[in-house]
Amino acid sequence: MKQFDHIGIWTDQPQPGESWVPESKVWVTNPRVHPARIEYLRAAEPPDVNPTDIGLWKLWHLPHVAYRVDDLDAMIEGEEVILGPFEPADFGRVAFVHKDGAVVEYLEYTTLEVWFGQETPWQEAGPV
Image 1: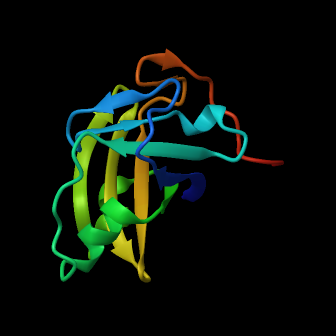
Image 2: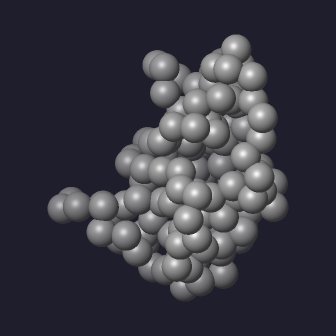
């Protein structure tokens, strides 16, 4: 199964309710509390990525689309993985891939009730 989760957008401005992700050294907001399912990301220090490393460069400069998946390992098999898999917090594992010219994040949740320790019961994005 693959279902839309959020869109990640870079910012250089601190955002309310940011959480720290040690693995990638970025702050992120909770997309579940944004009405359009937007996650803002802010790097502590954006890495100097050579533009010839296209997927990784796009990860640090362009938006990404994220999907919830049942089996992260199966979803990334044979894909161009550019970051991960890793556990950003208490809710599961993620990996970023370069697919169809875009950055895609896959999230395998172990719980849909928390986001970086904050109780955030899951709600579908839009009408079901």
